[in-house]
Image (cartoon, rainbow, N blue to C red; front, side, top):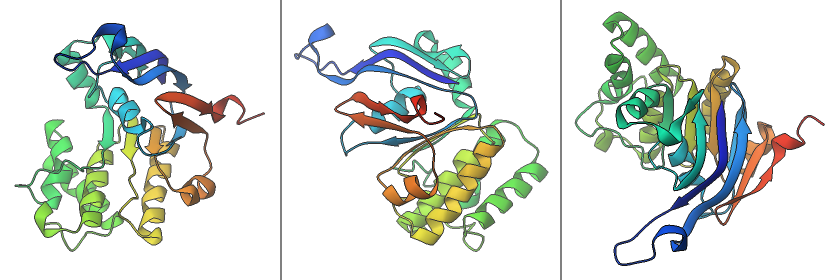
Length: 233
């Protein structure tokens, strides 16, 4: 489960406003996503979608309010606890964050190795995923030897390889053609059907139409629409 309860995010700059006078990136944000749910996160560029995802991944700490992730009060979590919780979350941000000195194979394998999975299991799962995202012939390539779309597919494979309880993605199809985007969505929806909670930020009206799920519409850092409230009525 993911729950935001009156969450605010404010950045305090040195010599600038502080406390309640600091500009709010996110304000009055409240919503709930049940375990195994799927939500599209939509809104104009700069509306706050990426900030919401960073709060879910614990890359940002709320200025006020409560965040519950996977049954845990994330807002009051210690650093070590947060690190352990992140291992249950798969995330793809727009900058991909691949390790430049590792091959595509080793980038995808890294979460499994950190979880101390057997090398036999690593080889089986990583090989299958790289085939699924169309990179079976480029497993030894470093990130700088891959196109932007290929790097994006490596990042997505890495995010799902450990079958996370929560999967977050920021414009995961932005550098992909429609065929690759649909292949990726099959992977994400398959993960969701196995019980993973999924939140995907997108500008693609096509994807939102062809893969129907409730939208969380963000506008100026606030929740403008929560379709889950009327989705099943």
